[in-house]
Amino acid sequence: MSSSKSPSELEADETAQKRAQADQFAFDVDAPGLVEVTNESHENPAAHQYVVSIDDVTEELMACTCPHHVHRSAYCKHTAAVENATVDGSLNAFLSVYNNNDHVGSPHTGYDTDGTVDHTFWQGENCGAEATRKDALTDCC
Image 1 (cartoon, rainbow, N blue to C red):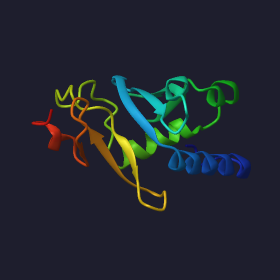
Image 2: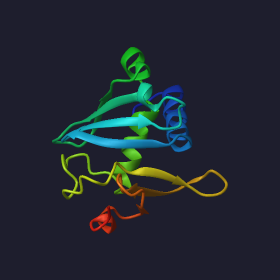
Image 3: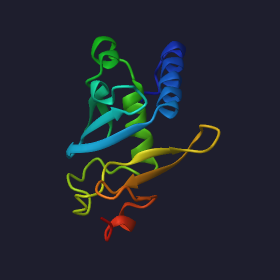
């Protein structure tokens, strides 16, 4: 995000960050720097999948395929979600394969009893086991 933004652009960015924290997202690295983002908060998550691209040299977030970004060139909640996940270390957008753990899905956002985001977790696709560290599921399923 650029530091030369107008107050209304900064307010829109803050709104995107709040929406990213309120929704639950799943991430899948399609290729290095291309992150498929699924908004799992929707009734039909498959209809809310977009791709966020990241520059492989600068690691700056570049674009999202969602209508908000495409039609307005605006910072969106999908980009904010990827930014949050890469900053907190739960997502490495430049690994095309995660430690060969093919049986472990994308990271999920975990919530506390008040509905506040408080952790990221992975789930074994075959057995449903959950862990806050992906490598903890290596011998799972």
